Length: 371
Picture 1 (spheres, one colour):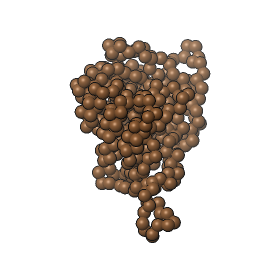
Picture 2 (tube, helix red, strand yellow; picture 1 turned 90 degrees about the vertical axis):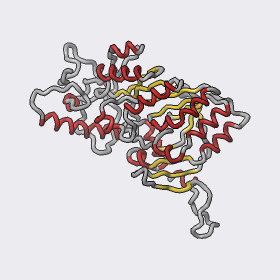
Picture 3 (cartoon, one colour; picture 1 turned 180 degrees about the vertical axis):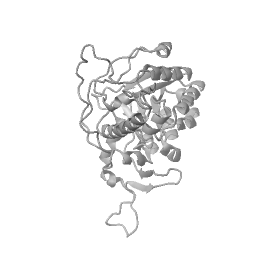
């Protein structure tokens, strides 16, 4: 692997047989409390990552305590980063997690440099700092403390309810530096959540986290992301989501559509193909003419059409208006035919097809059950 040079157990030519060196990988471990996961403990050479100047990101620095993520979100844009470790972007990304065990020590040194300008640092922009590994390694308390003591403003974005453990630390840090908190959630259907985010706490648990942060005096925004074309973009779904978010006391909502980068695209499209086959079987075995009002259950129209690269607007519903949202949500475009053959278990998938203009007089979504 490319990170073999960081292994602590890499034998050197001058070492006695069986005597590990103290370079790189400390060890690879599997523990009973996290079945199916392997943690690769490494020594990090740096903690702060500079965001490229041409990036549109609103922060100049990031910290990533972990590489890979046990949340196992099928749509996760960070999957491709596992290729740099010569691991695959699918199962390995979900189960082979690299842990930077000396992260806090390295971060403290970097923050103490005279050249450090105390610019904003973002956590959770690649993989989640409050995934399962954090319950074992407890890196975040040290990171929070180091940033606060150095006078560095920072933000945390997570799907992990483990953040509740650090609420007292975050409250203390907020008295010293500007602090931003965000919770990501987008799926409210239990079956869809289990299929697309099998390692993520339930939406209800994350709403409870938002509520706990608000009660602790820590304003928390919600990232309604990603909005999935044809699955979570109906007015009913978005109204339910925005209403629940507002009721939980969120300080604001940011809506982000699905964006499939290479690495995530293949796995998401394979999941979608399997889902379509399941829906098709369910639809064909059901009573003819039966209608469903929940696209995430068995939307038969997906069997003949697929979302394309366009994004059209839908009007904000009552809950969105109550929450003060004027953003437009992406919806699926029905005007692209499916590929000749459905993708296999892990196919190479190209860019979504372009969207031809909808023919005049044609219905908006052919064959889609009305709700």
